[in-house]
Amino acid sequence: MNRRVRQSQPPQPVSKIAEPDTALKSYLDTLLSEIDDLTVTPPQVEVKEPLPDADINYDRHTESTLTTVSEPTSGGAETSLEPNEPDWVADAFQVLLFEVNGIKLGIPLSSLRGILPFAGEASQLPGQPAWSLGVIVNREEKVVVVNSARLLMPERLDESSAIRPQHLLLIGDGRRALAVDTICNTLMVEKEEVRWRSGSGIRPWYAGIIIQELSVLLDVDGILNMLAG
Image (cartoon, rainbow, N blue to C red; front, side, top):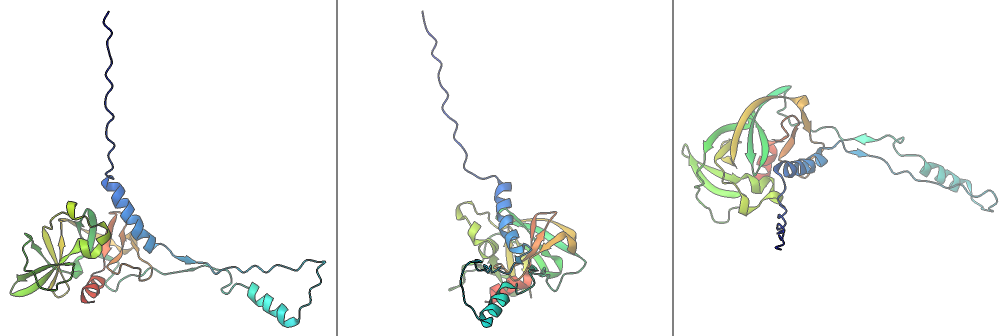
């Protein structure tokens, strides 16, 4: 009698690649941690009362000092950093949305000088910074091409999976251009729809997050200051 032998199926490999939405949420969470309504609570100093039976001698100066230390320096209230809105912010403004390295970003149209196609060709200069892709000529003017992924999010830069930029966004006086992967669309944004950053933060290039679009709103003035530094 022949016995049928059941063949076991080999285990399926488990994918270790994070979903795009998970990676995007992780990055936005990092940015939101800087935009958070930062609250600073003054430390409470506890002064223990002496035991009733303890024989402790202290003078009035010591008593006055203990009373002063036990009082909170700001009445126990929490202090908050106000949202830091850039000078160009109006009640409503237009934004161009685009993508860099899988992250959706936005730039105010008022800060944009123009859009150029980019085939990846740029003249290399000796001693150029790491964020520079080289120089191109536009209307007889030299334009420095900025590697947006390396400048804005070097911690997410993966050369093996990097997308070749297809467009250039001219900013400032038109002699700087942000290399971007994809142009998405434009939209009108109310300033209440942006969660503005608080304080200066460690990333001067972003102004806040457009909540509905889950996109990072760039501060072009901050970018230009970085490039000039």
